Length: 298
Ligand SMILES: NC(=O)c1ccc[n+]([C@@H]2O[C@H](COP(=O)([O-])OP(=O)(O)OC[C@H]3O[C@@H](n4cnc5c(N)ncnc54)[C@H](OP(=O)(O)O)[C@@H]3O)[C@@H](O)[C@H]2O)c1
Image (cartoon, rainbow, N blue to C red; front, side, top):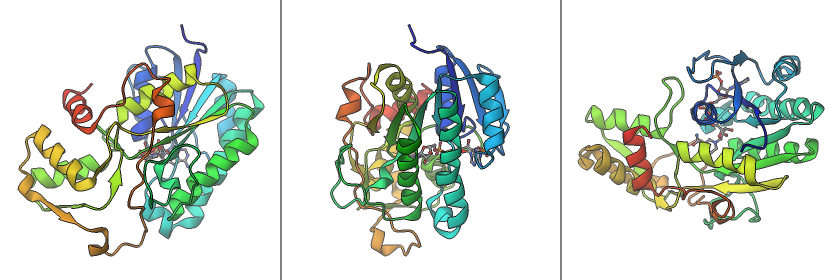
């Protein structure tokens, strides 16, 4: 029996948000928002347009929906764009989060803020919730600043730091597996880092875990949500080829130093998710299982 019924997902048109809305629709009275992409989700028609830079727009939606729990997934998520468009990244990821938090606090809602593994510098890996944060790029800085805003403004919150996610996109927002699949389908070389380690998380596991934490967690906790396996991007590509039937000869292993990049990225931002796993009713998938579920659309 759910402990709340009215749920608002801000950023429901995004990659994670779209899966969250669909996962939540069976259990909750779900409303969700989009900004530039007015998608439709048959199971959950209650959609609103808002810009998180406009407090009045957020307030109007919250007044109408009267949510008990708000999941804030909206963000500027492209790390390259965050680096080159810092003012916009700050406006969305920090000020926008403040706007959402202040409006949520006004109505006494619980806010679930979606953060990232990129709040860590990637020098050690296997990060726990209490590990020292030290973002190495501006995207990570803004997401960490968003966490601080949430803690400062909200009486009731949860923070879920999710790892690099994969899964089927919604036609507008997707993930790096879309890029890999496109390259492999067209016989292009797909270059993947052999020295960049993550704990990739299947997006439907992320959605289910966030909803379960909303029910089961005490207030004001931070959780890490990573997949059941630490591996590098090249190893991920190999498993992707194996499960989806692509020829791995198109994969090329490269070192991060081989490819000049504007944006620094941590080498090993793997997350230790034991704290969340203890509360969850299911095991966070390893990559093979996650990709199998993705293939079957589960
Ligand atoms: N994807 C990952 O691998 C990953 C990893 C770690 C953490 N995260 C975090 O998880 C969350 C979701 O990421 P995602 O990849 O699912 O995001 P995404 O696909 O890039 O979607 C971003 C969402 O934000 C909305 N949005 C953008 N600007 C907005 C604005 N001004 N006002 C209102 N909404 C706005 C977009 O709406 P429209 O498209 O309608 O404009 C969309 O719904 C983010 O907080 C991200 O930092 C993601």
